[in-house]
Structures are given as C-alpha cells and as structure tokens.
Amino acid sequence: DCVLDPWYSLGTADMLDVAFMGLHVAQMSSPADMARCFDMVTNVNAAIMGLDHLGLAVGKRASLVVLDAGNPIEAVRLRAERLCVIARGKVVAERTKQETRLSIAGRPQNVNRRHKSS
Image (tube, rainbow, N blue to C red; front, side):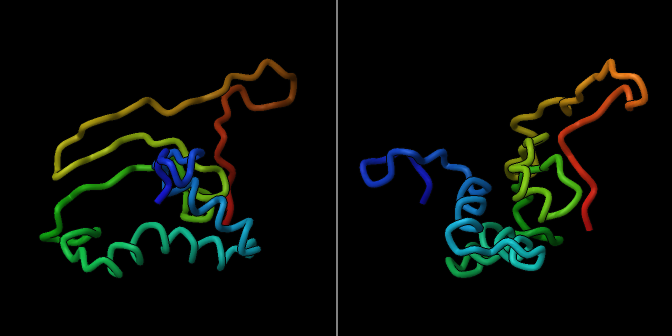
C-alpha cells in the first residue's frame, strides 16, 4: 500500500520504496535482513494473497521487473533502476542502463550506481 491516496500522501506505488522505508523503521540493516525485506515485497506478499500464478517458474504468468542490481540487497539499498518491465510475457517498458562518465585521472572512465556486494 504505497499509493498516493488520502491515507498516505507520499506514496509512489513502488515496492522498493516500501522496502527501503521498512528497513529503516524496523532497523533491519544487516545483509540478511535486507534480503528478507526484498523477499517480503516480492515473493512473500504474493504468497500471502494466494497469487500462485506469480513468480519465476515454468507455467507462471511471466510478469516481472528487471532491476539494475547484482542481488536483492543491492536492489533495496540503492532502490535500483528498472531496466525492463514485462507483463504477461511482453515487454511493456524498457530503458537503457545509466552510466556515468568520469574525467578524473586514475579513475575508471565509466561507472554506474551499482556497487559490488556479497
């Protein structure tokens, strides 16, 4: 429930925002807690609502969002950019990966927001 409505006027309808805020409010800052929170806003909520047609498996609906993140922790921590949105097996939105070019001696020429974490 993160929509712009009379009960919550700051909503963005973005579950990564919900997870990010939840991490802070519940003081869930360990890597395990961050991964768990990502699971809460993806797999767990669908299971609680009985939405068995959702998920990444053969025979499922094939509706998903591709994030520019190396893992769930990175996705929540950085609120990763959405690279592609697929609804019922069809791409409905996509964007190119954002790179930043640097002109600083001794630094890489191209970087992005993503950082490696394990």
